Length: 396
Image (cartoon, rainbow, N blue to C red; front, side):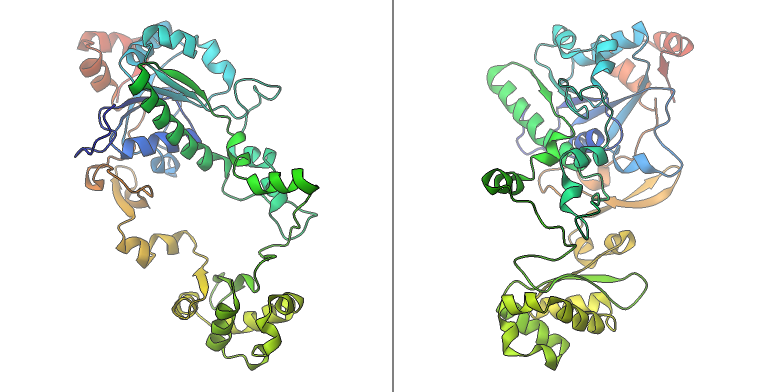
């Protein structure tokens, strides 16, 4: 794999077979597609990919799609043929699925000894939980994240965004690039096992360290901080409009007080963090009274211009219209066949990705089947017709 700068993206020339579903795996392969890799999504013809709510469109752009029955011998043979000319195979089934299909890494490297394979089951390929199903929410729960968030210790609260999924997807991107680099040096492929539940646990280092040192257990206290005060989210003018504020030192505190003009908060005692923490409820009450009369974006600008860390708590529509992100060209508008023009997040990892004007929308199941079979594998039109009649391959 040559990763020098290329007009079609830094990963052009790389071919990835994508057997993933839901979020973690599709996110990893979407990033590869954004950077120019040829991503071929292997879809079961019996399971729709493009749904009426457009849920999968966000994660399956820039991918080709073949509708292929892996449980049929001819379909399995086609997958092996694709494996022989590909660089990466990635899947996130439960461990038994690839075993039952007789498509384990040991089988695949007989076809392609240079292959990199990545499995992303919920709990890894081995261990007492290996065959349990998992989603990002269960992965973050096993890692203990809900036990670190909430408004009091009696009721743990999940992140609300299935944290295990995106962090596992990003881990897969990094580790696969590392494996590909090693292959370029040694000529050998390798197998990578990424447990969905392990990824969020690896991001909790300070809590592991504190617990092993002295048995420390974090106090659950909403948006409060033991280091800063005030620190939290405050309701502003409008329906469910909020702003987040973090005062990190004496200078920021003085600037905050000057902006809101509250004489009761100008007492010299509040220059000390300890005194502010002692009267935190009182301070929060005075701040809440001021913020409720302010537009969230106006308050944010005032505070930021004064040196106070503040930001609106954006809902999805506010995020998509954010002037800063739009000025930076972060978003991409894609004209989808069933839904019209929709705006999505672009690519947060700066680099040589494919120009967004050339990005393709999610292809439905089987939309690329003929292209893949004929152009990549050399099948004839008659072969394709037979495969279609046998319901081994779906053609759109």
